[in-house]
Image (cartoon, rainbow, N blue to C red; front, side):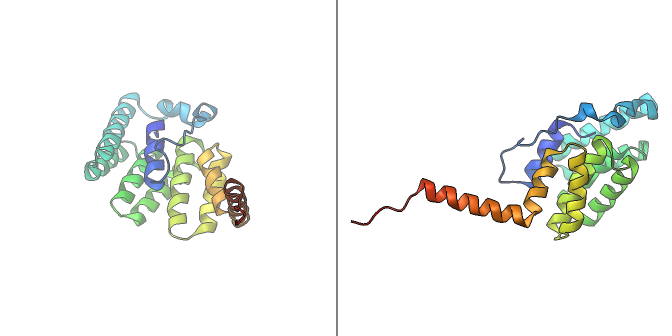
Length: 188
């Protein structure tokens, strides 16, 4: 499961110039698919898998990405049909430079979640970001559109950034505001 802290870490990694914690996807209560997570898995196995995921997140936050990958992999071995551990491992793999492995995990997370719920939304956003970094803007746009439909404000922001007309309008607006703030001084 991706907590608000996880979302903030993801945002800080992919957007190092933005303020930390700038995105808050607080629409999880509107997504019923993830509320029944405990009903789909034995409670004791679910508890252990979530403990491993939390340990993995803490390891990643402290810079021990290798341990994070190991913890997420153990969680996956306990609950191979639970998409959240694939999301988390994908992030850790990307931090290790294994973009191919990260994309494979994200594809699997999208498949398991059927592209819905919190895990589906997070996988789509992460995959969209990687695809965008690889210059695959159309595929990234498709993932961001799906994530935006699931309530991701961050995905909506990315869609605006991918829109060439919006970028042109933003640039023109920025230039106009700058001219208003710094009017030409008459020469004496």
